[in-house]
Image (cartoon, rainbow, N blue to C red):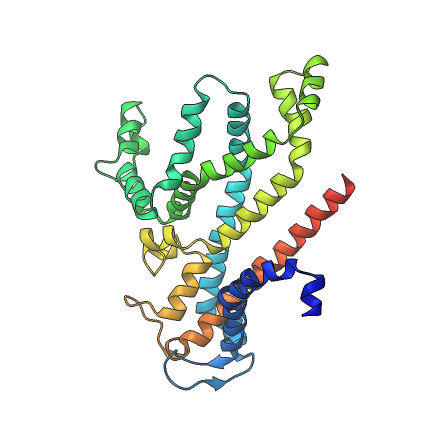
Length: 308
């Protein structure tokens, strides 16, 4: 007790640490352990060492799925960083400066966060439907009828539709994140820039953005983690198989398919007999991909903070 008497704050941290260890640390360690076994989730386990990892990276079928899912997840990440985050920053800046109607736009932009994923998928299905979809009707109305397509049935567009749904759902969260960062910037620096003749947009690029570098890096890291772990949109839109030619397949969906099966197209063989072992292997590889990039991002963030 002497240890805790000198450090009483540890008693406040202990409940959270126990809960975190039980629901986060233990599952990760257990999944890593299962990845070294051949197991279907029901029968006895058989220790196979690194055979599951060898099978994942040497099987042409598995590597094809893995590469496709990884590329789709990276597409979501790159598109979000290149398009969504800049628009979120601009939207936050407009609301920060209290442009006309900013209160309405703040609520309207954030409100999709309260819409469930199935409803968002349903809305986009109606918008992009080949027969009654609003988007195709709009193309016809403005004289671009030759571009009318059955968008939901085109394999090449599937992952971009998933990205649009994700962006629609989470746009407001990122915007509020940047808005909060802008409110922490000192008013004196903005007033000094205004007195020096900095215009509306010059204050954004010359004063605000340089002081938000760490915030932007943190948002990029959050975007990366979400892109690698997104599941529900792809599952609802394309099912467990990942859509036509797996066009909406992502890393988390691939793990689910291997671990819990694909009823409409079972892979059979070693994969079905080793569902939990190989599924845990995919989960561990995904964890390592996220963990390594996250550590690099955290290192860059702290280095910039020390330089500042």
